[in-house]
Length: 262
Image (cartoon, rainbow, N blue to C red; front, side, top):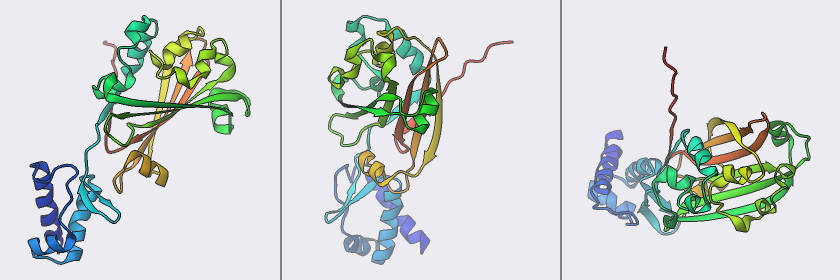
């Protein structure tokens, strides 16, 4: 009966919320829970499945079902872009103090583990159209992952693209060993004389790929949010395109639009 598995889910949810079952604790076996609640094993399985779908527990093959350590949430707002632009021309000392992930999570630099991978590749049809360049134009693909120290999964996976010819004036921009770059992309572009005028962000949600589910540690049924960020400079030229994959269970999008007064 539906109320039986809902009763099990409600009670286990309460126990997790009260700390009786802490992150990392293993739930009793399905037969033990069936005896405790006076129901069948399939009913227990159904109730635990509700909590799994909510991201409260996770099944580990061959080990059992465990209370899930809730990942650190991130709040992404559109005010971050002006914040990043304001920092782009500050001293290196000031730029080293914080970054965009710290801005989104409230964490400090010492709380984070960062990785960057650089690859040069020709623009496919999609990216060529985004940059308004010929297909095959050489791009620098930069893949970024940042996670909280002690957590397994990153806040997101970001793939940023720059046209090689646009950044050739500063060879350091081609080196991933210079990351994390103080002041981020806006400062990098500033070093080659590029100032951003506006940023266009387009969002869509979709089911994750198996690889995304694994890397982002997504519970069953959780979608990813896919962000395409297009940066346009003061000459109306697209200078960066970034595709960011964000986990739907721990990302909050906040957009504030200031309206002019009558």
